[in-house]
Image (cartoon, rainbow, N blue to C red):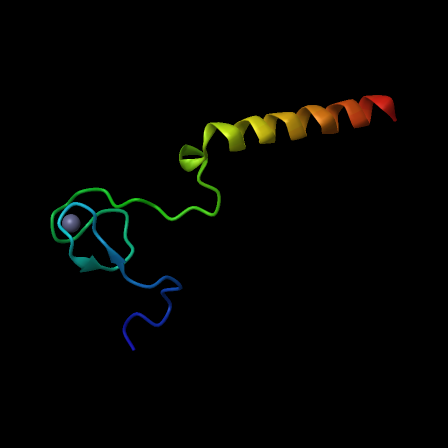
Length: 66
Ligand SMILES: [Zn+2]
């Protein structure tokens, strides 16, 4: 088992389409691979961002009221 310590599975490079290990850069074409984040703010829609802001404001008001 060479890749026993690797917690992630292999990823597909969006640039060349090859299945590569989850590294920072693709070993095949050398392009940067997209990192898998738990919370991707770039992919949030405007509505979700507004909801987040609203939630934060509500929390702030709650803390001030207490
Ligand atoms: Zn690639």
